[in-house]
Image 1 (cartoon, rainbow, N blue to C red):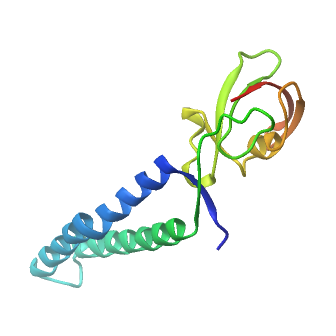
Image 2 (cartoon, rainbow, N blue to C red; image 1 turned 30 degrees about the horizontal axis):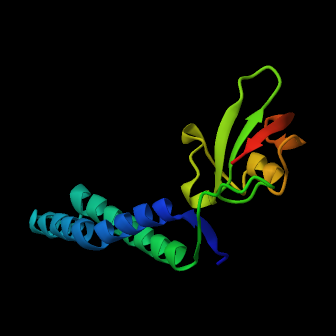
Length: 153
């Protein structure tokens, strides 16, 4: 599996989630399974089926987080202003819209609503290695658009 880019904050958040799932959530699901098994008929026990599904989801998420964290490449938000890299904060402007600020992060912690865009997204890919003042064409699923990079930092 290729390495994923994570900020220290993102790494710590995912590590906390993993710790929670391994401890508290596993115990909670095990208790739910035990109660469902004690509730009688196994043939049509919807609660047992739901508990098994939840257990499967939790174990899958644990495995996903273990792999993600073991292959993580930690990045720091950077003040480098020469070119855009993972960790850069960038201010861009698309004609007809207000300027917007983003931080380029790895896919695992991207959240466009919070201004955190993935380096693998169309916008993130288009911005990488560009400089302030550059005009960049972005090939997005909704169509092509152009933005100007106002500042990096």
